[in-house]
Length: 110
Length: 114
Image (cartoon, rainbow over all chains, first blue to last red; front, top):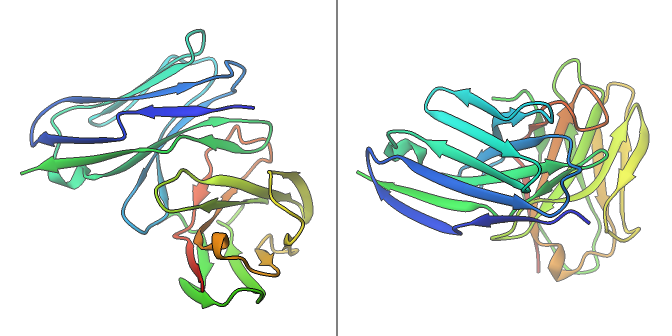
């Protein structure tokens, strides 16, 4: 069974700082890895999808990498802003579903 | 905005009752997946519907059931509600059934069981 772990569980940083969120998974047979953002009490917003054949994806200030051999993915956020405050979830792909980590709750302090 | 809608947004039920949650998928998507997210946890896969058929199920008991309609909208039904069913229920739609495409999530239905 795929298990996904995210470290740290919570993170507070001052505005403008660069930061890295970590995600590890137990089964390297995942097909792809997806990062989501969740605002309190809301649904999930897809940020980046890394296909199995890719090693990284970039969107604006976000960069996500995938290393299947080590079972790890990272989400890099450059020049953090207060609007980035949210919970960030990574999810690996199963046969027809996503396996989620418990998330990292990010607070960016103005 | 993902184009995926869910109703109702909030719901309060008592233990033992039954509940039906609804999801409208994004235009052009034929696959709907349902997830349960308990407070402070990541979403857990309940089941997926592809072209009106169940296409995979997570570790949830049979009192969790679903339907998908010809327009690809979907319902999640939960019978004999338990206190632990209190959670945010999320649906996600995609254009393929094998999760290799981006899944687009709705805003969720928050269910409270008293």
